[in-house]
Length: 389
Ligand SMILES: [Zn+2]
Image 1 (tube, rainbow, N blue to C red):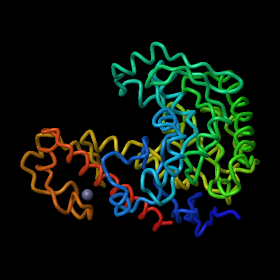
Image 2: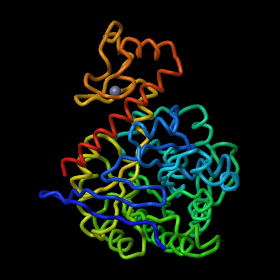
Image 3: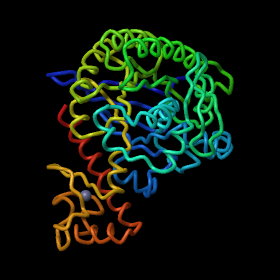
Image 4: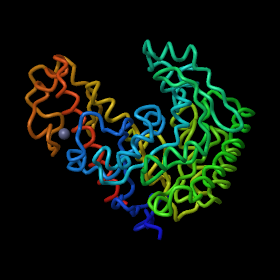
């Protein structure tokens, strides 16, 4: 029996926005939804109980990191990801492909998903510099060969291997294995990579459907395919038709989303109308407030991004008007909360002055209180978006 179901409850009169619900064995996800990233099977600094109280419905964990440490076999032995991290709501894992890209080629070239965002912003750490010097990931027909960012060991990640790892981790949603091409890749390379990615996705789906482990496990997981194709219209259309025609539960849009936000909107406009309407759509790695609003308008159901929690740890806080940097001198004697009217624990109990002090004193509580506010902010934003559809 399939325990997964996506139902569209309401469609917007204008545009492609829709409100829906994804049913899973670990409860429902109301969409559009924002999925916070807990890379190492932890939402940095907050407990699962706190995450629930903020309204978080589902979290995203990274296969690449968990595969390297502690290893999927240990997590399986400990009862799977849900039990291991004491989170009984839905979880999604990625295929590991993006991390191979971002810790491999991304570091070499200094680029992220949207080329214009990262090159100037990303300062390499010493470790990243060392790894990037020797990473040189090799893309083969069978998969990707790369060096672990932890110990430098050589590893071959294939579609079959990625699915096996994700089955062992046991998240509700898993992703097909793909190559995330760089925004700097030219047309010919992106085309070649896309064709290979499609072959990998066929293999991923086949490996997923194989009843190697047990019947039960298959029913307890659902798989998303990933549309690639860089910023090239014909490739995106080709990929949307190909992946949309396969037996995936949902469709994710991944890879390079171009060189600007405008490019990203165009890519969504090309892609979404070619995907089956009745299946959930996920936009990988995007979670800016405006990006979410634009994505929802274009028919995206779920988003994941590490930014709100990463920003919180750096003292950047989200408010309705703008992002604020709590380290700023003007908050030294500010008795107000981060945002007046915010119902989060942090805003209900602490002043900006105290929060600023914690950040300057490098107290652990600083990142925690900031994370609570930013995640609460994101959940309230999504509630409002759902209400408005
Ligand atoms: Zn707050």
